[in-house]
Length: 384
Image (cartoon, rainbow, N blue to C red; front, side, top):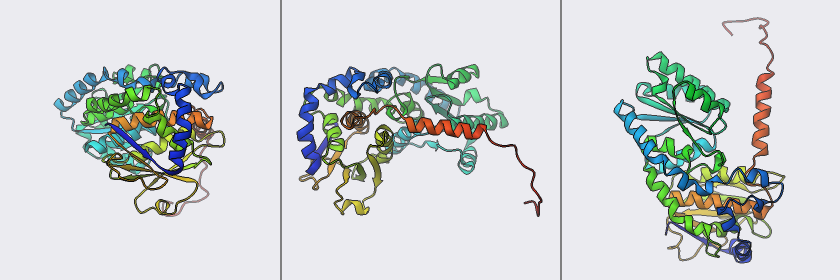
């Protein structure tokens, strides 16, 4: 089976109590049908344009041949190194996908000068860069693009031969990249960044780096049928109830890799949960743990341990109170997306908006726009 989950303790009680009601309310099939009313009237407008991830496998399959063809073209021109410039959801999924596949992908996810200079100094003449931004207006990503444009020009390479762009259709980045002659992959605009792992945002950089993205989508496809059906064994309903239905709510989740072959998966899940549920003064706080973390042995009342294992089905007895999960990477990504959407319904929040993220971006832009003019120093000494 492509995905398995085993629950115990308060999580098992939540599953037994809540999943039958979720089945009765047709939650699984309504998510698959992209019904925006599941999360209440206030969330309906946003949810109505953020449920494209439920059909990401079908939408993304036509991209595979184009990505592979571009990879072959780049290889033929001497490219053997892929850099990804992106923030948050644009970089976390490709990082997990490539690390798990054992494929090299250099991630630029900050404007730290040291990180950027190190990347620019690494095989620039055989490098291609993927610039990835859903909004097309991410400041950090724009600066990364500019850095590589200048660097390529500096060694006599046309940036249009080495820069690939992933963004929403019609975004500022889409328009400027096409005007510059760059290869552009448009993603489904009805998918939020943290739900975009199986869209162009996850597939283009991973595929260009050398991952078998056709197999990744096949893994997700294998579990799609289960997730769409209103049945008590639906893994998305079970996981959603287990993480958001405990009474009283365990509002912290400790995610620990314990035998799973997937590398760094907890970091991707952490963002998915935090950004989807942390709002309106409530939510679930995810924390990535290691096998030596004290939380694993302290049996804390407000912490739900999720253990990513090699085989949940083979486990003879789930550790008391824990959730154990196993499965392929593609399947786990899709199940977690469904589960977090279910969790949003149980918590009474909109899992697709991001008010604090947007407010932080607005505040940052305002701060940058209002910078005072530089003031001449009162004195200098030894160049300082």
